[in-house]
Image: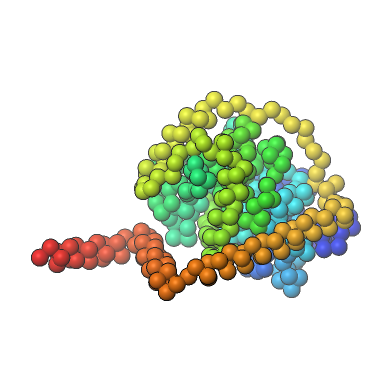
Length: 391
């Protein structure tokens, strides 16, 4: 492996000997504490990119301890970017994109594994229509059920995954179509669109809603945002964030998103109080097709220099970015501690019991939906209960 230029303290960029010099696609993967998930992710890329567009893989060690980096440092098929701090998802992607040499950027979670044709299908979508600025994959759970095939944004800023819990190959979701946004656990962005929206908005530090925001911004600039179901990844949902923190960040960042886009959100549908997956799919398809049918392509922008030139980013720039994100991390921790304190103060025995019951009921519902035989048992029990209570 070779080091290009003189890396700034805390920001070492190492380009593997087998990484292509002129890639068509730059794949960006972030890693934080552990490198076990990212190794599986990288191995799946190696197994399935042959025959597709020429790709480089950029791994940003987002505050990863040096002791955990040895397996990645030993690889000669990646660009390894070390950072002394955790930039968050949006900030980390923005930083890693500085070192990308291709005109098409792919963002992939370290807890995702790709399948055959994954990259080719995303790339083909971009080639087929120059108006497409963002293309997302069809995302499956490990058991083959659908996690999402595009996503819906509601008027209150909340979101829904299209097709969640359905069969992975559900016929209604197997064609390329416009959506409100796609999850960036696997998504390709045209460089021109990326520059149009100035990358991710880092106000959503450390994670959640930056992908919703970027797609919203791209659509506002005239770009199409599509789900390409022929591109498939398997995703360990929420595998890198504890549940309480994930809920806190989702609510906090939803408020930021609504404040930023409140005028545009007025044209979106109210979130249904109760709506099945099919109803949500129909509602979303009707609104998106109606509003995006006449969307014009974005005007061309001047291409900026990148790649080898940006690999030698100034030390002062690197340190300024790290300092800003360290300050963001401190502010987030203080905000989260205050939130937990307020939650604790409001808890009582009855509250704890209700929350435990709701969590248990929700988990049972998820298990039932995923296992038809269990569903049959539950239905039989319900029938017996109804018979006894009617006597």
